[in-house]
Image (cartoon, rainbow, N blue to C red; front, side, top):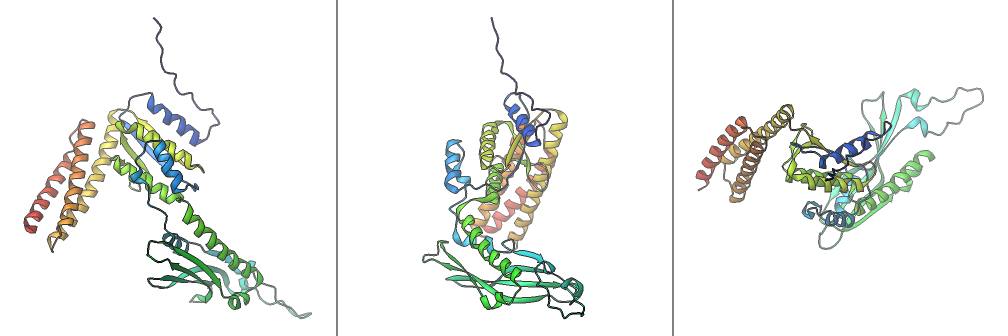
Length: 358
C-alpha cells in the first residue's frame, strides 16, 4: 500500500525579501497544528474602490458588514483640508528672486542672512454652516529672529457646498486670490498653484478610493470580531485562536490584493508552555484594561441618571469580556484568575447600578 503525504511548502530562496519569507512561513499554517496564530498586518496606499472591496469580500466569503459605508464627499473634504491634509513647507531661500544690485555695491542680504528660514502653505478653518464649509489658504512665515510668526491670511478660499438633503454629498471649489498670490515671487506662486491643484486631486481620490486608513480599520474590526488578543499595546500584532484559520486565510488574500506592499501574515504559534504564557499574559493585560475602563464608567453612571440604553451597553461590554475569558480559559486549559476576579467585581458594580436604575 502506498501512502501519500502533502508536500511541504518549499523554503524561500536566500535572497528572498522579508515579505516573501513571512508569506512562505504563513502558508505553513495549514500544514501543522498550533495553538493559534500571531497575526500582523500593514497596509500601504492601494487604490481600492468600495465596489471592488465588496466584490472581493463576496468572492472570499468574508462578512461584508465590516466594510465601510459609501464614501461621503463632506468626509473627503474634511480629510483633504483638515490638520493632516494638504500643505507645503519650503525654504524661502530656494524661492526668493535675487535683488537688483548697483555696480560696486554689496549684494542685499538673503533671507537666510536676516533669519527668515521657511514658509508653510496651509489650510485654516474659517466658518461652517448647514449649507457650506469655508477654509482659507494661508502662508505662514517662520523667522528665527522673531518672536511671532507672520501670516498672509488670504491667498485663496477652499469651499465645500453641501447638496440638498444633507446626505454628505456636495461640491468642492478652490478660488485663489490672484492679487495676493501675484505679490509673491514667481517660484512661490507656482507652489501655491500646485497646492490648489493637489487639493482638487486629493479630494477626488478620497471620493473614489478607500485608502490605507480605511482598509486598516476593516482589518481592525475583523480582529475584534475574531476576539483577537493584542500582543503589543499599540496594536498591529494579535493572537487569534486556531478555529479562525479559514477567515484569516481569506483576510490575507484580501490584503494581498490591496497591493503596494500590503501584507497580512498569519504565523502559527507552537502549542508550547512559553507560547501559552505569552498569550495568557497578553490576554490578562488586555482584559484588565477593558474592565478598569468599564468599572470607571459604571461608577460614573451610578452618580447620575442612567438611561436604559446606557445600562444595556455597559452590560453587553461586561458579557463580551466574560465570554471571551471563558473561551480563552478553555482554549488555553488554564484558569485566568486575575481576570475572573475582576469580572466578579464589575458584575457586583453592575448589579448595584441596575438596582439604582430600577
